[in-house]
Length: 302
Picture 1 (spheres, rainbow, N blue to C red):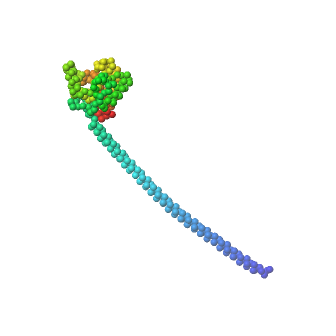
Picture 2: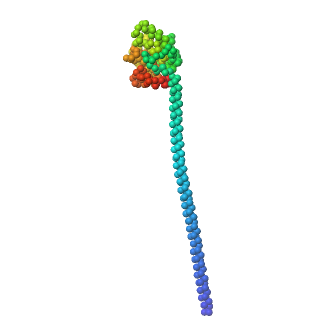
Picture 3: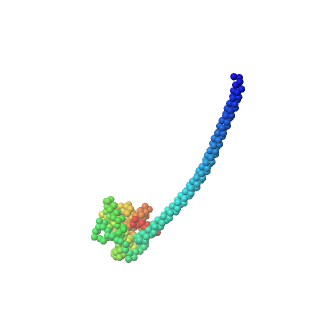
């Protein structure tokens, strides 16, 4: 046995050396593997960092472009809004111009005599005749057989007024309406024969009568025998004072006027707008200046 001991020792030493080498190799190999993995990880992290930086740069670039695009869009919207406002302003100007042209055309076709002051102020010559005259319906005449005409555009306002008066229990009948230049001359001549120069206090000379316009009416009512005297004391007169302006009529010759005697029966159509403004102002047609009255001509039949 003793003779094998040296061999066994040698074998043990040899195995120890071999085992030690193997373990060393294994540890080296493991470290080498770890080193490779660490290198791969570092490379991956390095690549990821670069990609992240690249992506961030891309994001920043897109954000910058988006901001620029937003600014451009806002600028475009502002320019479009400005253009729209200019177009709207132009359209308003065109509409105003069209309205002005329409008004001028309408005004050119409206008889300028309709709101002129006559009654010893302005003059209508013998050739003046209203553009259109219409016979007054017999229902509104005191004498049905009498020929009484009124400006055709005044008729609707006139009929509305008398119908509403009738609904309120008020009798209103026409005794005089349109009179031509020659009719007025004949009437004034007859009055002059009877009253002399005193006729000038209640009757206009030919060419100065509002009746020649075809827009003026003399009324009578029940209880005064179809005449004019006493009309100022009737409920019909009071109704006209309270309501005639709603239909475009105004009394031409109130008490203490500068032209003729008080004529409560004499009412002239001047258009609803002017009649209402006169009424609200407590004024009469001849109280206002002609240039103020002229402004109402455009809408006289509206």
